[in-house]
Length: 437
Image (tube, rainbow, N blue to C red):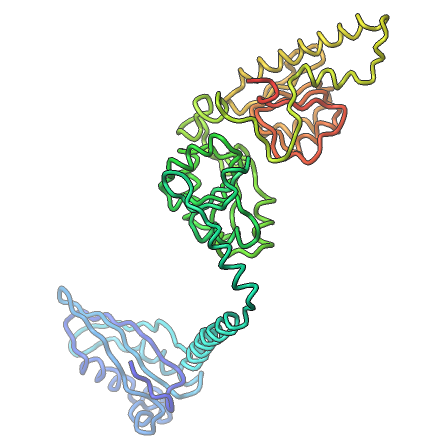
């Protein structure tokens, strides 16, 4: 509909239903005829049109099965009160030609507001183009060269030729993202151990490398990112999950946003727990046939941590014992007792594998309580009893370790260690890799 900008301030929109077949002249005639004299001389439609304060009445109609439906558009340059009165008068029309009819006002649009919004939107587009041109022209030679080098650093990794950073092969930990643009953006900020899957169909290259390295899935904060995560859970071995802020893609993130997202990564099991993902079905949840039974997986961590089995750990705990001849039998007794305890925890951990459950034990090695892993932190905090050891089917997080230290727990045994920034004295922390499971 073409509106006269000189005479149109408001646009009345109404819907029409007639119990019969009617045409546009019938509708226009009914509007003029049934409102004539109803609103007084000052709001007579014919006079308003002659003086240019009302625009041309537009009618759109369609007929089906003996009924007519459509809409009416009536431009107005009157003030708000007069326009509202005129609009309400249209609803008094009950017949069009020989047919009963009903008109409902759907709304009154302020044409000037729409024009202003259109101006704002267009101004944004023009300003964005200007800023883009300025940014491109303002890049110095160093930035141009740096960007070119970053793109050159993208390699095609493995038989599937997956776009990747140059350090994927040499790094113990890698980042799996969606596409080449994500890899380039991470390279831009010095992250060179990323590899792209190129869509929801996960390449064999990524599946294989996920069995050998600590893997963080870094996905977009949209529906597509969720779909890629689901596919990765089913086909690859993911250790940590990191997501871009909602509605943003990894390729759009700034350095600060990338660092924050990667710092806030969460372990796989914790992600399942937060999102109520059922671990009893699906390949991604088949722990006995998947992640926790990795006969060939390398013993790797995100930071250098001295590998030790329970014997070495026991020896470390006995540093303060004086090794005199008189005390040797006593030391041997302590060693044997701790070895026996650790072997018991090892057996319990094997039993719990795949259950997402935990057991609390006393000094005698007796099970005090069995519970779900998600209840573990709160239960330890509030338990009135002295807990000697916690064995659970899950990842040992820094938060859980801090709680265990606060409650003076002697052993914390889990499936895997998370990103632990500190391991305080006075507690023995063991994972499957330490227990040779």
